[in-house]
Length: 72
Image 1 (tube, rainbow, N blue to C red):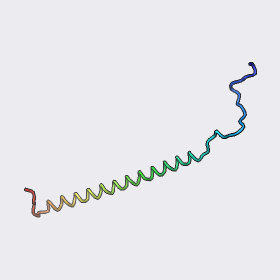
Image 2 (tube, rainbow, N blue to C red):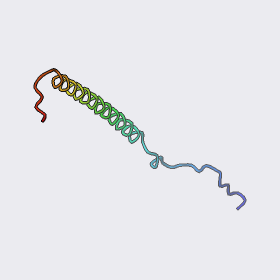
Image 3 (cartoon, rainbow, N blue to C red):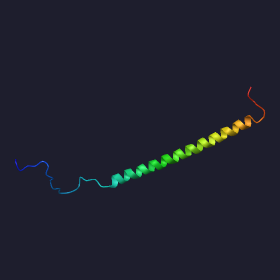
Image 4 (cartoon, rainbow, N blue to C red):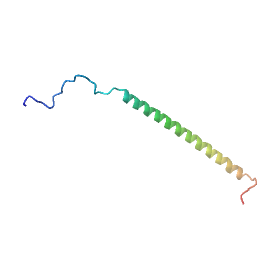
């Protein structure tokens, strides 16, 4: 029992239990795709908001431009 050392590194017959780098690479690529898609969605949302604000501004100008007010 004195010869047993729990801190000793035991030899490995095969490295079958070590995972390859492919899962990490896939995670990284998935993360990049998600980030890219989120940036595109944010950009489209900003463009939509800008267009909506511009449209609202035009509507306010035309309703206050001295034309006929149809609100009763």
